[in-house]
Every structure is written in C-alpha cells, then in structure tokens.
Image 1: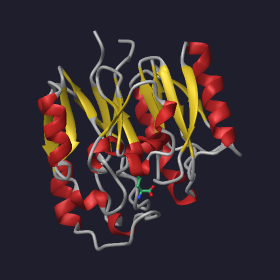
Image 2 (image 1 turned 120 degrees about the vertical axis):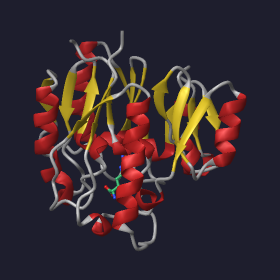
Image 3 (image 1 turned 180 degrees about the vertical axis):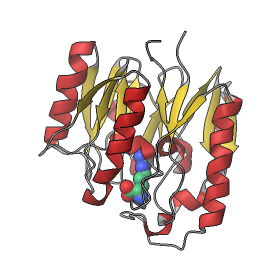
Length: 258
Ligand SMILES: NC(=O)NCCC[C@H](N)C(=O)O
C-alpha cells in the first residue's frame, strides 16, 4: 500500500520578496497567501494525506516552495542544492523532516545544483530538467544516487520556464501533460498530451483519479474531467505571482518503508 505522506512549509513573513525569473514582479498579499496555503494543505488532508510541517525558514522568502529542497525516490531522500544561493539555507530543515520520517539520506554536493522542481517521477522513470537551476553535475549526482535503486534517469532541457515541473507533470496513467509553448522538447516523453493553459500543466495526484490543480486552469480541468479524472481545484494565485504551482507547495512521499 503506497504511503500518503506530504511535507509542507508554511509561508514566511518575507514571502513577497520571493524570486521571480520568467515573470514580472507583482505585489503579494501575505494574508491571502496564508489562506490559500491553508486551503491547499486542507485538500491534501481531506484526501488522506498525512502532513508534516517542515520547520520554518523565515529568512528565506521562497521557503514555502518546499518541493525544491528534496527529492524522494522509494525511501531515499536526496537533499537538493538549490540553484539559487538564497534558497540553500532552506534545505537543513527538510533534511531533519526526511530523517524523522525514516528516509535514507543523500545529498547533492558542490559544484552540483539541483532543485526538486526539476525532477518528475513517472513510475521508475525519473525525468530531470537541465535548466536555470539544475546543472549537469546535479544531474550526474542524481543519476548516481537513484539509478542503483532501479530508476531510469532521463535528462531533458528546460529553457522556457523555471523548472521542469513548471512545464510538465504526469497523469496517473503516465501520460505527460504540458502547455506546448513552454515545453522545450515534447518528444522527450513517450506519451505527451498538450493542455490549453500554463497552469493546467501542473497536477498533483491525490489518489483514486483525483487531481489537485490550480483554479487558474478551468479549460484543462474540463479536458481532464473528460478523460475520466476528477480535478480538485485550489486558488494559489499569490504563489503563482512568484512562479509557484501546486506541485511545489509540497513533497509527496509515496513509498515510505513503514
Ligand atoms: N518547484 C517550483 O516550481 N518552485 C517554485 C519556486 C518559485 C521561487 N520563487 C523560485 O524562484 O525559486
């Protein structure tokens, strides 16, 4: 029985100063962001996910995007080394949380960089985006950690968005979905289905055919409903202003050994 355990980290007081790379800076409403985050976490809880809050890293504006700090394959947690230096102090508390859950730990070491948002797992295939935040050495180290565990690691280019998972995620049947203008190489994926909205490219698999998605992608939600899935939508508008999406607000641990 797969585990349903998720790491989250509540927004800190400096959220509005979070990094922006591919979008223009817009003011962030912290109180609203807090409400949106609570709602996001509640949806996970409502679908049977046990929640662990990673300790705050309040000096780090981007700490809420906890997915970038750690990648978990089976029960091995690979601590990231974020491409943005300002985000590196976020990793320490993620290490403690992963350790407390019984994961074996490994870590990306200098000069490697890797953000968790660049890693998309589809069964035993692990796609890793080589882009602005993850360098070739980070890809090499990820391969060295996960391939001996049975992963097939495939590196793909990412140049049009912040992270691989800003461009593509995967449906429960393994089909990779993405908004074509933002996907460097759709042919990298054996089954690729285009979606009509940028935010529609991001799904979190809640279990039982339910997909957690941003409210900003109603046309994609209809398309996925038509494929037999059940979208559950949340407004994460304050996080989207900082290039966040539904995937990056949590780390899902599905294969804990317990
Ligand atoms: N995995 C993700 O998509 N993370 C979003 C991170 C957004 C944050 N403002 C950053 O630039 O690092």
